Length: 278
Image (cartoon, rainbow, N blue to C red; front, side, top):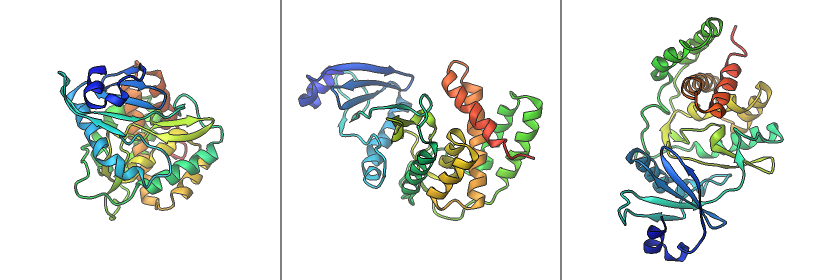
């Protein structure tokens, strides 16, 4: 990484470097006090990072919370095959690890953020084959996930899923979506939601996909505050959002055996979506 900085951004090359994460998709290093460097580790991750580089600088200007819009862009060089980014460092921890001190205020903050983000997207927006799509397109995965829960919960969840999947599809334009909005991609600093991160799955589609985060973080009463702050979720959209929360909870429960943090997010969301099932 130091070679890339020296060649392309020499004014940053002497800053101290600390590896923060070396994950499946990206190597993430802190650079000095205020910056991060994100270097994709595989081609699929490089495509996601390219979406962030293209669209986040435009969207960031319209959003009420900080997002990691790239400050510098790096190109392939020195044997490294993909583009890479220098982004702001945001203090805090994820909401999956430390919930906001005031969940009512957090619900209003997050609802307002999504209201600003969910503007009509251009035809050139990225297409995601599994996010933002009509809810019925997730049926196969939901049925597979339900095979791994208890029989009593399975029956209730299936009833809920059938209701959500049958909800009318919105007839408005496809809107910008975060695409992977869950508590591990929301930062909390000093007890308040402070930033939203990891926009690699940014796409256009049904806003219900993002609204599902309300079941991952908030109680029923707090979700009402979230919905009020969002301001434009009709009953059909809200029902689809609950369906997305179920679908994503089952993904977390089924694929997080080695990640207790995300398994906990899945368990909380699964219980929340079943609260009002008769």
